[in-house]
Length: 167
Image (cartoon, rainbow, N blue to C red; front, side, top):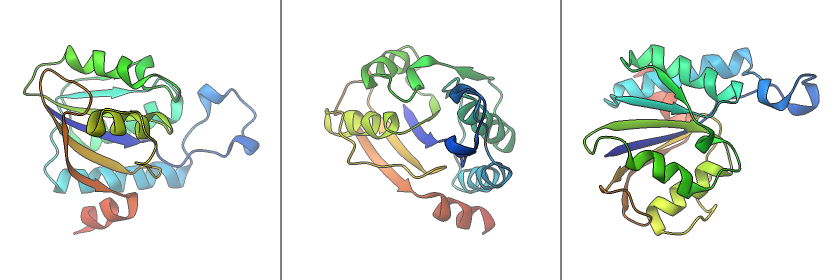
């Protein structure tokens, strides 16, 4: 199974947002940069068969943009297992239910994505693998999905992915 972990794009700052945290949106710049990152993913040949997203608006909007740019057939699925403080094991359970030959794109938040990457790569939920906004990593996950059994194929920040997208 191929698994791509992506952090949501640049969102309106918490101090500037008057609504609920769940409804804090991407900025215009954030949306534009996510589209450029998605172009980089397209150039890299990423072809997701599933897109899972945190239900928080900034992640769901990031997922919609990536979904459109990559022309993914499956609809975006909102899952609580990608919320910022979800346990990595809960997302592993979701991944275990997917077909073994799929490519799943998971869009979420910090610190969850760092802990998830750490769990899949090392078996422990470490935050040593930090994600910038709209940054991504591509993992080859053994099936059945188990902690510590993934291989890192690449890890890129948003600037690298945007540059690839312009190529």
